[in-house]
Length: 536
Image (cartoon, rainbow, N blue to C red; front, side, top):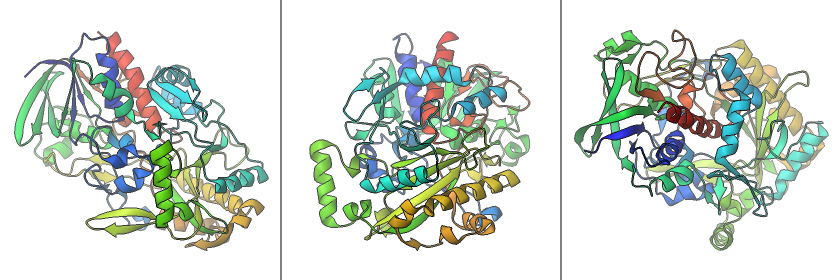
C-alpha cells in the first residue's frame, strides 16, 4: 500500500480541517481514516434533520455513561458522530467561538500560544460570515450564517423578557463583547448544513494527494521506541498496517482518542495491565480531566402559535418542505436552537457564567420501529433552557476491555463540586426571573412538567439532578499543557515523550469553553495545521 506522509485518524470536525490544510501545498500525501461510513444520510444535510440523526445508529455511536449517584442514579445518553463529518454532522449547528477569557485561561493552564489574541486569527482565517441578504465578510471555507431574518416570531418574547430584566443583547455572540440575548449563528450554506466535511474535506478530496478510507477502525498505534510509525486497523474483516512518513495525527474526538491511546499502551498502567495491554508509557492523565456541559430545559404551553403549529400538522410539514425545496429557507433550514446567548447570573461577575437557549418548539421522543425520533408536540409550546458555562467537576473516559469495538467506560463525575451546584441554582434562578417577566408571562399558558416559577433553590438543584443531561460537549481527556506530569500533549499538540504523534481534537482542551464546542474544535485544528507544517 502507498506510504503516506500524514495519517489522520478520524474524519470529524478536526480531522477534516487537517486534511484540507495539510494537503493544500500538494507535496504531502494524506490519509484520512474514518471508522464510520461516508455520512451521506439526507438528514445530515438538512439542518433540522438533527431530530432524525439523534438516535440513528447508522450515523451515531449512541454511547451511554455509567449511572451517576449525583444525577439520581441515571445513565446519560451520549450521541457521537459515526461517519464523515463526525459529531459536527449530527449536532444542532450552533456556532459559538467561546468568550475571549476562555482562551486566556487555556494559556494560563499551560497551553502556551493559545490565548485569545492568537486563536482569534485562526477563527477569522477559516470563517466567512454570511449576512441575511447574502453579503459575505471573510474568505474562509466555513460559512457562518446570520439567520435573524428567518426565526419564528415567538422569539420576540425572549428578547423582550431580557430587556425587561435589563440584560444585554448582542447581534453576534461571537464578537469579543458578544454577551447577551442573540439569534444564534449557525453553520449552513444554501440552506444545507455546512459542517467540517463539506467545508474542508470535500475540496481536499479533489486533490490527488488525499485518500479517505471509511469503515476503517484503527485498533492501535504502533511505536518504534519513542516514535509512532504506523497504525493497525481493521476494515471489512481484514487487518491492515499502514505507515506514516511524517506524523500520525489522532483526531478521533474526546471519547475515542483517549481510548485509542490506551489500546496502544499509553495510559494508566493498572488499567492497561488489567486488560492485558502491554504498557508502552504510563500516563495516568490519558482519559482524565473529562469536562462537559450539563443542561436542562423547562417546557411551557404557549398562548400563541409556535413552531409546533408549523411542524406538527401534516399540512404544516408539507408547507415547510415546499418552502425548503423551492427557496432553501424556513424552519427546515434552521437549528432547533434559534435564540439564546451568554449571560451573567449576577451583575458583579467578571464574565458570563451561563448559556441560555430559547426554542419556539416543544417535542417528545417517540418510538419509530427500531429507532426513536423527536417529534414536535401537537400544540403551541416553547422551551427555556440553560447550561452553566464553566463546570469545575472532572470525570474520566477509559476503555472497557481490550476489545477495540467495545463501547467506552464514561464516568462524567457530574456536579461533584459545590461551585457547580451553586452554578446550577444560579442558572435556574436566572431562567426563573425570565419566566416571571410580563413578556413571558403573556406567552405562558401553563407549564409542562415541573414549574420553574414555583421552585426554591433546593428545588432547582433537585430537579436538575433528576432531569438534566449532557449538552454533548465532552472535552479535555488528553489535555494540553507544558508539564508532562499533568498534561498528555504539549502546546504544539505532540504527545509528551514521543515523536511522530499528535492529538488534535476537543480532547486536548485544557478547560472547556463557555459554549458549544464545535467551533473551537475546528479552530484548534486550523491552528494545529500551522504548527504541523512549521515543523516540516
